[in-house]
Image: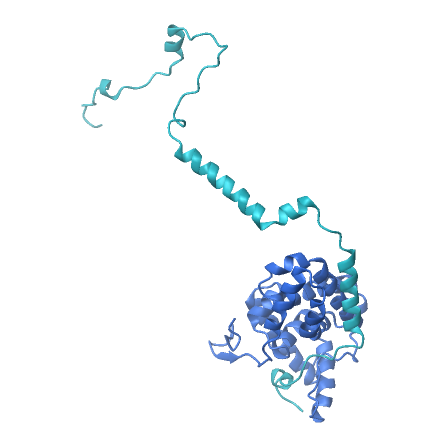
Length: 112
Length: 200
């Protein structure tokens, strides 16, 4: 009987199950069920969908509050209570110079 | 999951009908999976009834050895029991089971590669229809030829043409892209044809 192998395979079924395989497999599974230790609190917590949802909700709430609460983001940090007041001269030196665009003279020379 | 018609990856967009297969075992697995996840240990029998023969088949196709296939099936049921708390999240129980069986079979084949150097001619990789005596001889010839295929090709060809899975499902089960699954199937069929014609 010749022909394409895919056509020849058509109509054949799964290989027959060996005797006793079902009983042996179920027995092994039941032994695994009885031997499996009960999960502890931390495992249940990590595997819990509710706990993970609660954690995600807390993170989302914190992020929302961080964006929503006004007046905190742009404020300078207050000086620590123990530090001495800043001397005005030192403050002027410590302040970075900035370029005032109005003071710049526009260039009027001919292009080279 | 559309398994009725698939596009052949290399064959000019010609629709290739997937082989027919008895539907329903996929859905039959869902209730016992959920029951086992809830702690109902009697669901194991229902899972065996629905999937036992298919688990043994994929294990045999992959390992090429009956004893190894028995070990694979038992290991699958051990894992099924030990992971019962995760079963409620499994969306496609039949593919999950076949995937676990495939992985266990691959691990076992790697460990016992020496034993599989010579395939056994006595292994029955398929079963002939009961009422057709002519197909008995064909079964023996096909089994001998299948025994000489590499495990990955034998698995792909058998999953496709005996179990009736789509290339996409074969890819999901064996952990390869759909194109690779189809390629393995095509190469396996070509080699099977040469073996059946007496040109190994």
